[in-house]
Image 1 (cartoon, helix red, strand yellow):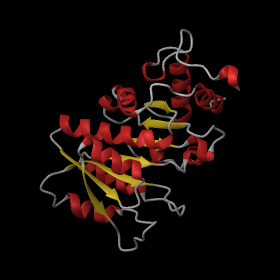
Image 2: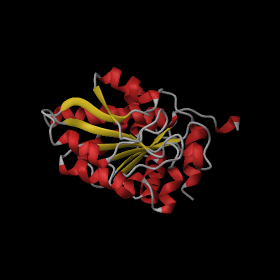
Image 3: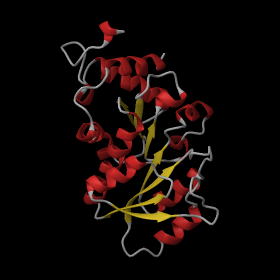
Length: 233
């Protein structure tokens, strides 16, 4: 594979300013997943999670929302580091059946919080599927988020394949979703997606690349990019 392990040179495009072959491939992936925009990650869902938090922070700043995210307690550690780096506070929401590994937010608990909140958060963050394979009630949670104009972010790292079963968080109304393509699709380790929904605020789509590049290596793997591209066909 060594001859394909290139760097950002003329003709090979630049991942975080893609205008050529990488942008063309990402656009095909966007059509495949039915998104407003899909961008590639060579650092798995960890990078995309950080980008989602950063974008939610920007959304909050532009819409007079507190730098606050409501989250289920089974969040990946990349979420915690992203909140620390972007100076976002977190309030953990749990339902009556929450356990250490399965702590999904319920729509009822979410609305109970939002309808009495003195300051609205910029986003709600869920992990679905969780680490036991449970899928959150995203449809009803998304309905509540839209009611209060709060972004819904979904860590779908283990569920990229769900798009082909019409059970992806995007199908149920999430605004931003990260997928680890390498977990359940034929992609090299590290390959992932950041998806922005068609109905999400335009600023999320416009700033997606900048958000990723803020946290990413300047030397993305073209072997990983090639494997992401092959999934499109």
